[in-house]
Length: 398
Image (cartoon, rainbow, N blue to C red; front, side):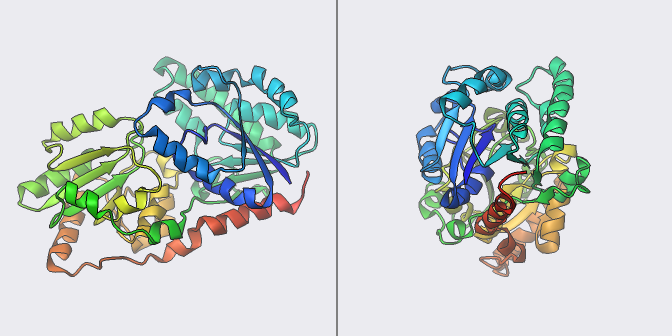
């Protein structure tokens, strides 16, 4: 089959994510074409070349087309996609396809849904996030415009929902919030992990040595430092534990978003940068497992709000595949999947109690070096890719 995917993410310039893994599986069975924004600004980011090499390996053999090659803001590329996409369709002969997948796209996804709906093409709308909620909270949109942007966003999302053949969502809670859980065309396709990629890698002993982490209990995080992350309670708890004489360090890998702000937060709390806490900056996907495996506990410190409650963090599965202890904000979907296999903290006192217990187990030698999480086996990307492929193959057209 010939499959066209419209993505709000530039796959060539982004680190490994949900869509990379889905495409990596689909391209085995189908011709896959992706049309997306062009994130020119990411080329100047720290370690961008490493990110790009990771991404290009995953999508090798997939044709990537941008709305435009002009160096303008991704927001404007999306806004003006109504003008650029007709030209793209004609130039690359995209009139004839077997299936259209809209990945988290709003305006561009709306246009292409309208276009292919008229031609009787099967349309799959992949909702990985609460798009309207993200618009209303987006720091890239001026505060005075967010309310109106949310209204427009809701219109486009609802249109895409109504006119898609299949709607895939990452979480049951998200489908209930969007009131699409009762629709026959709604299917839960969760996030996952490449289990082999994370299981087979050994800890990065060179990094552990360079940071002088030996004989220290290491609390870590790998990922974007976006607006939904809140390290405040964790930082305060670790500061108290260090003051009590505990040998404990924090390691944070990631730079996208509020990097400098989180360094400033650590200093304000009283943590010594490059002594109590280390900010590694960007980390390539190939290096992620080795970094995670120097952690004794991996954290998912999401803010607890409407958007995050309907999310399913990739980190849950990546930490789990690495076999380290997991401490997460008590998000609804995380609780549903991981239940009591992991630990939950949101307040400083909760982090303090949990980390005290884990530290004492570590010191006494009672803690297992590697944990075996039962839920991980159900969330391998290979299995999820098979589910996705089955949906596409059910019927070639509406």
